[in-house]
Image (cartoon, rainbow, N blue to C red):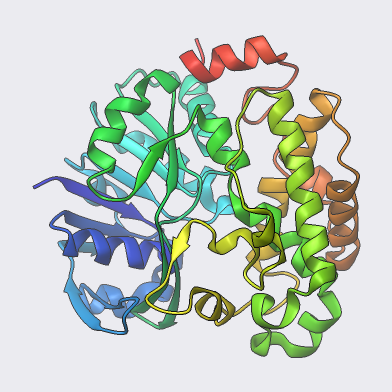
Length: 364
């Protein structure tokens, strides 16, 4: 039985820890100590209640729930990072001292994570035999419905997975495809640029800002906020990201044209539900405020570095630029300044050939 460490304490981490346990893996879940209160019920019970997509409830006893990274990572074959993009760098820094040869780290979902971690390992002179990977999104749409209880609404049928360096992808795929429906991505830039969250969430939130302010917890982006006007904005963002991807030599996932004009937009294309997929996605709540992760994660760690990559390849992104500017005004935050830089992930100033070399071979 393979040991797996699941890092994080939110929707994704709870679901992954319970799901992998049900699939026969020995799973440990670890949250950062300062967020201990948020997983207090899970810590106390050492168990998670998982409501699957058919509404059946499973009480899943985990091998371990802890806030001790050393304890969680010991002898783990796979380290699954299901943490928000804004927490990625902090988590990476904390686990570096406890990494062991032969471990594989996978970030769900991408957000330039593999490049970030590879650069950190290089700067710290870490020479251990570690594989770095990322998937373009989480394996499901899920929500914590109450402390210690998570619900799956939809599940993925196709997940892009890639490693850094790209030559390791096939080897990592052999294990991960037993867990989830992964297919190989060209490289970790493909997994990052294909993450649908930055394409859908920021523009949908900015264009619905007044509605979000008014409704708060009662706002549902897909059910209430995704109209023809918002769909046009989402399509425009996708087209600009696709141009950046083409300039960088990265393929994008294909979406049927009609999917852009559905309530769930392209968020449901590669997902399934037990019944009525459109209706199920529409029931996924949020964002509760304009300072939710739909902006504070998907913009500074998604659209901002995507725009900067576009600048590097002389690709114009006027709609992305507008969303960044409007979000900066709405939240009184300079997202261009505070967002992820290409220097931070080690690809600033690289032409296409040099970038492809880094993606294939890693940082030398």
